[in-house]
Figure 1: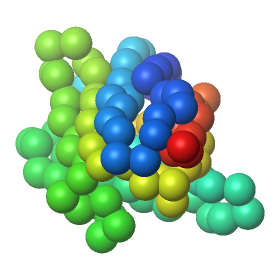
Figure 2: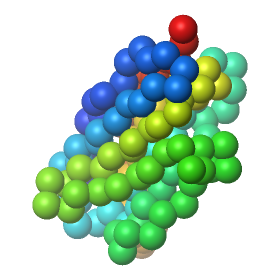
Figure 3: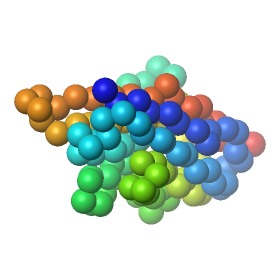
Figure 4: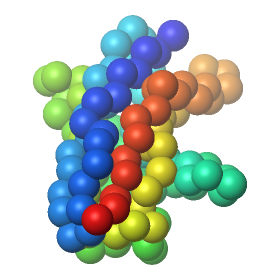
Length: 119
């Protein structure tokens, strides 16, 4: 079992910045990837950014150049730095952990944190 606790959401004006944090606990040794997803009202949940245990990253095209995902292995925490935020970034952001296949890979989710970009 992996537990994920997010923090850092809130209300920000267009062009502003926020940093989301996701603290992992439990069977953290089993985690292959940590990621951030988001879900806006009436839309499907989508991948925003992902980082592997080796540090390789991937981003949705809509956030490339604006968002940065990173992880602090000593603190078992993953971050999403969001700069130049736009109203379209408004959504509930979820932290995700994907384990290695043992024998199947498992997905774990945080409770979500609201990000609202509005003037």
